[in-house]
Amino acid sequence: MVPQKIDTVLYKNGLVVKDLCLTSRSSINSSGSGNEDSRNLPFARSNTATVTNSWICRAIVRLFSTEQGSGQGFHCCHGGSRKRYNASTGNDESFQPSGAYIFRPNNSSPLPLTQQVRSYLVQNTLVQEVYQNFSSWCSQVVRLYKDQRFVELEWTVGPIPIGDRQGKEVISLFETTLQTDGVFYTDANGRQIMKRRRNTRETWNLNQTEPVAGNYYPVNSRIYIKDKYAQLTVLTDRSQGGSSIKDGSVELMVHRRLLQDDDRGVGEPLLEIGEYGEGLVVRGRHLLLLDNPEQSADTHRTLSIQEYMSPQIVLSYGDGASYSHDSHALQKTFSALQEELPPNVHLLTFALHSPSKVLLRLEHPFQTGESKNSSQPITINLNNLFSSFTLSDIKETTLAANMEKGKQKRMRWRTRTESDLQSDTPLPPTMDPAHITLSPMEIRTFLATIQYRNKAASHGQ
Image 1: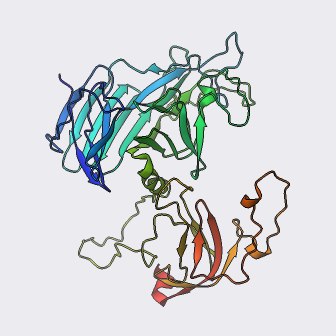
Image 2 (image 1 turned 90 degrees about the vertical axis):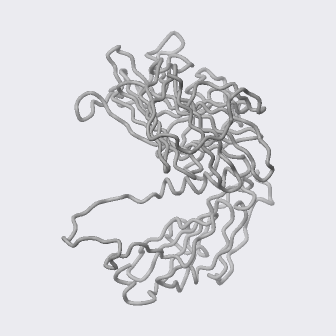
């Protein structure tokens, strides 16, 4: 059967995301040349279809600038394949096996889980989904909603089989034609982006003896690669290890099952048996974005916060009354804000500190220089921030809120930092709550007295 090809065009924020193709490998490269058909086809052609190929369904995402009206380079993304490393049990170079604390594969090239992926397509006017079965214990759903700027990959891995007496470490691998020159980027605790260069340490000479494990870094919320034309960002729903072992690639560790202890104090292998005694099953989600490097931060910063702060959906027993959309008994929407905050201001913490005081933290989530518009200082007015209550007696505190900022006495360290980067500027004697300025990556903490605008708000909201 000929592989099913799905083409879609999404218009948003001056970009056209074009041609999500579920096909085999394309010859398109970053210069824009290639033989892939780029005709625009309807968003949905059938409700279901079967997708087959020799290896894996490939996602090809092309970016065009509608403002310039010309292509900015075509980039092929072989998206979300599942591969594995066989765990080392020790060798002539080192006795060290892979274990709970140590990642040490026995080969630098990951192995495919299977030579053929069983896939089928479900699509309608709202969403396109490709269901992929890599094996009896590994599957994935690739999901693209209409007018959505990113692709969702929902994966399920496990129980990892060990009948061959071989420990396995499963990764999600994204391969592109981006020219990355050994450079990739990971976040630090969901905030600052750190530049990484393969087989390199910035402050000391590295003797690299582990080409895979030695290039893995913590990925708390995102990892990305880029060249002058495009940036591929993968957002995670949990902390994972990740790297770019080859130029143009991104990989994330999603599951491990090992048979040997790594001699780091646990005294047992990473071999949880799970509820049914067959091993653990892990389910997670990756969000895949392809954008212009100049605009990518505006998308991935906001989306990362939404992913991390997404509400928990819970169900409860009702009181027996029937529910109607026309009913006014239930409040369907509510916002405590007077108006939407600008994209470079995030309400990080709002918590009751005492019966009459609240703890408030405001964050500037952007880094200096990563966004033309959002990486600038921003000033907001705390007096008119909330709709149901007002704040008074506002005092800025340390980040931990254990003392007022003006009473803090910091230790003076002898450093070789340039003097213009050192700041001894004291805080003003009085703080103006109408002018609270946040600089890039800054978090400011406040304690304030809360006064509700009406009695109903103090009890019901």
